[in-house]
Length: 243
Image (cartoon, rainbow, N blue to C red; front, top):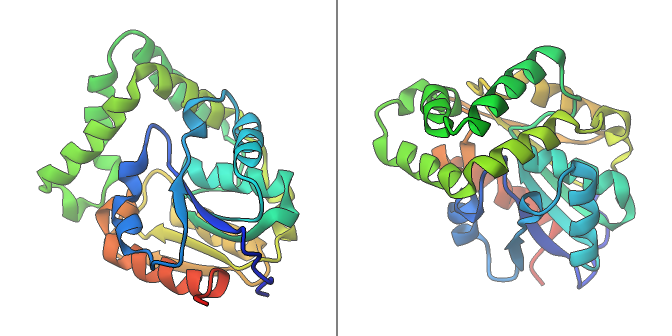
């Protein structure tokens, strides 16, 4: 169901963990002129998903269209939980509605120890292959852009944002109440947030659309920008139509 869109509605892009506006540069360049968009940085200023969501709602008045990737998708779902009447559309990319499981928490806690020991570069290099599809293994410029973005965030943000993700709420408890246009998108070879999480998420939301991108990993907005843009622009025609 498409809800009437007030004139104040705007598109907010929510980056993933240790990411910034560079994550969305290809999407921002492709947006039609009538779409007013911005990239939030609340994930760099708040300690929990709940406080990030509350801060975003306080800073962005009116009705919202949210597009979040990875941790940004988790944040978008928390914003929707706190203020469902203000959400006119959601796009959830490479994310999960589940709370943290014990095995993944242990991996994050181990990484946090290494970040605090000053071994950030070592951890990032070791985990680079999990961020992208194997077909992009030789794409040095893509890897460098990703690593540069995470290094800009720095070790302290990696620690803080991983802790925020560890403590995230169970979005499956409320996500089924959404009645706005929802797009769920995932790379078919996403090792960090597997496809089954996106299928589960789409199945939990009435009327949600599921888009799976072949030969694509976790960093889908950077990996396959044209395919991501095609899906997002189609979704936006339903939530922010041209007038």
